[in-house]
Length: 262
Image (cartoon, rainbow, N blue to C red):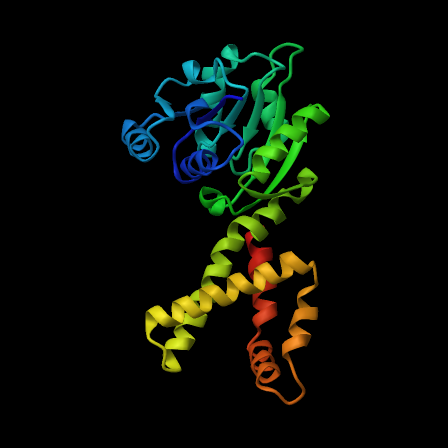
């Protein structure tokens, strides 16, 4: 399996770093292409065995999977540059380009009657440490190709196949959602400092608490309210804290933020 990643910005670089830590592909079967040599030098300094190039055409020739990790405004020019080099329908195109619909991708990469297998994918920055929550939608893909891409995405965290109509909402939940979770963590750290913890200790306590809460839900499959009920004793301090947060609009603010990000 050979993978080419076009674009070495935050997300392209994160995917490359995550894949080299996975067992899905050998690092020397990964090629990263980018216009800027500086970013390529940086990533090759970290991962000596991957291949780098500034030539998109050369990068895609032998690839089985082509990951498009470019800015939306350069997608058209990249497509024009590489589409004559594609081996359709063998090669699979995975796009993480924000806002690029499957309809647009299919129009850009179709060549006569040949249409590639296309996957619209939305990961988050935790992909670099193989903890991403990634949503994906396939188009013109065989079941075997869907399995390959899902296996790749699962090697970078967890993945969920969704209808394309949910992509914008999914972006708010799993991409923007990373920043929203970080904002809660920051606020909790500040609260801990105000209550007397040293900053580094408050950060450790909050980070591990949030990680433990998420792992508890993932491990049990329980709804959050089930676990909340286990720590909210009648007249206790937890329910008092929760009620104060709700009075300040906590849940409503989260929902409003998510809807604003859609």
